[in-house]
Image 1: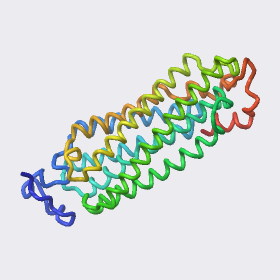
Image 2: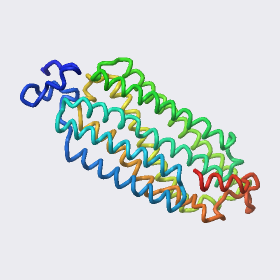
Image 3: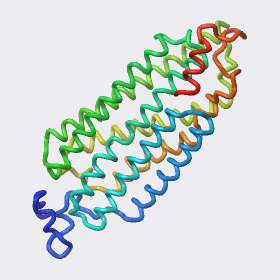
Image 4: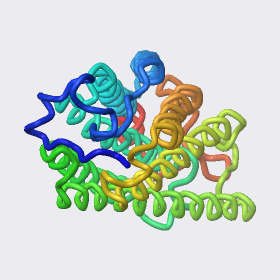
Length: 307
């Protein structure tokens, strides 16, 4: 049976000589090779995202994914601190806050691509004004970020004993799952409406070429793995910091670390710059063979160079 965990003010007194691993918050010693690996992968992905953003002028997308990757790197740095000292309060605080909210930045970048995809393929096929998608998803994503950050901070301040911190984190993750699910549903709905309009010869299907399908494949993968990760974190937090999932590093690596790594790499491979390159002015939405008149030149410049 595990020994009772020391309180936060006792953590500094714990060493490998005076306390057992079971008395640490994780009840295990984080893997040095695994955490170093994820720092390296997220670092490489961040550099690639920054280069791709510069190359294809996708500044907002690049900034959001770079922020997400940087937060992941800092978070796994905190776990390495806990490898060196499993009772390191600073390491616990850093990893729980940064790893928890890092995917929110990636989700925001993904939401923006729905708006841009609609504007490129056929704005008239959307059920709502295309801009409304960003106006709904981005603010919700900001709320998720605040709830998860505050919840993580409160939990770290109380060595995982704050029920309010757990509840806030759960609220943020639950909202993120709801928003992601709504995003998936609306994306699928738009796809059906677009294909129906193409079949009815209302719009041209030329925009959905092999390159765009390639991009959509990896965008779908990134969305799916972030969704899976959020569902896992809800399950993990629902048991609190004393639950079995929280104390299992293998599950954490498989359903947190690997999932977000796949999301970052998927968007390196299927980067939106492949289809939203502002240097290619003939790639905008078209109706039946005629450039879409709803998509003004000012909107073209705004979405292709600023987002």
